[in-house]
Image (cartoon, rainbow, N blue to C red):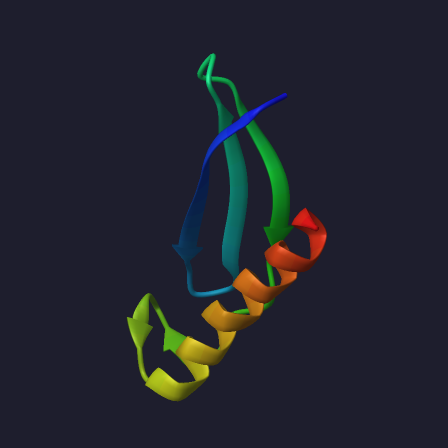
Length: 70
């Protein structure tokens, strides 16, 4: 499988932050190679109430996904 592109998707929710890392091949196939989903902090009812905690949650999700992706 020859890698064409790497994509990262982030979903920030009130209860958790999910980051997915996927590889897109030349034939257009997408394979998920990493996922991080820590508990969200700094959000209440979908509104950011503490930006530092929210950024930390997003960073944690991305770092977890990166570790799994190799």
